[in-house]
Image (tube, rainbow over all chains, first blue to last red; front, side, top):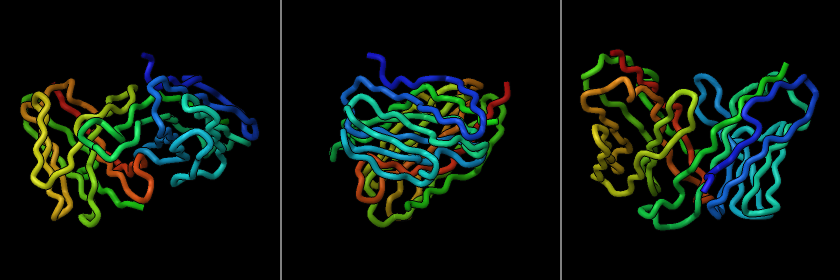
Length: 118
Length: 113
């Protein structure tokens, strides 16, 4: 049981380049999300998905695309990288449920991907 | 958008000190509150999920209380140790999507030996 796997762990890009951060989970979680972490800003939600074929925007979606073709995978695409996208990115997943006492909606995070855009 | 406030932003204590910090949130339409612990160079991990007014949760030296009527939760650490150094995040679900969590900016705790 690998949990949430993110790749790559580190990446350096030049302005204008595109890339995809991969996220996969093996827990059959319906909910998957991408956050970015910047100093003093906490975790900010970029995009999220409640199931295959369903995605929605979070607080800071501009410059990023996502898709959810399977339950397991939720890649984050940077279309044209900018220095403002230099950050640490976390993928997180949970199973959805009304019963909060059984662990529903508790996020499991990946190890993070550090992206630098020059 | 759900406004989740945490204070203080950072805290420095000596080993053995007890400490506490606060998470404040709108008291209307409360559903649940999550506490996460985030060590440097690692990823956040869930500590507690709290749902009922007056709830108290405990894990070792760390405990949390919840007051949904006034909209706050306290996290307490008794006899802090250097390994307690981490950022402690508070999050609440909100809006129409059940899994979506709104995070506070966290309290960064440093425990000096």
